[in-house]
Length: 99
Figure 1 (tube, rainbow, N blue to C red):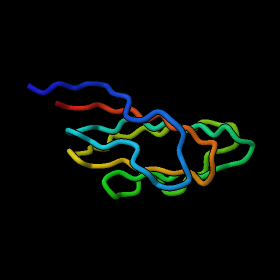
Figure 2 (tube, rainbow, N blue to C red):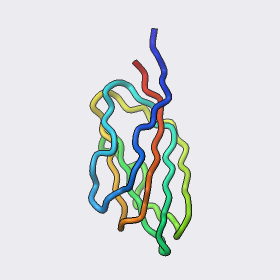
Figure 3 (tube, helix red, strand yellow):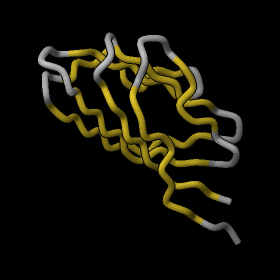
């Protein structure tokens, strides 16, 4: 029988180069991405899963929050990558890990 565990997949600042944020070690359902921009100007964010773009250079307004709800299934070894146009974007990414 499978176990479904709500999990924090990433919690931190995004850099300006696309880097791995999470790598699935078993089937994982990506459920929510929360992006906060702590700067006084709009910044853009890109996020991909398993090489497929989920968030394509989307603007996050100055001193604001963007919440993206989704149900993207990732399989073992799929990587979630992301970056921002400049420093100042934090991301909280949650999902469900199935073991």
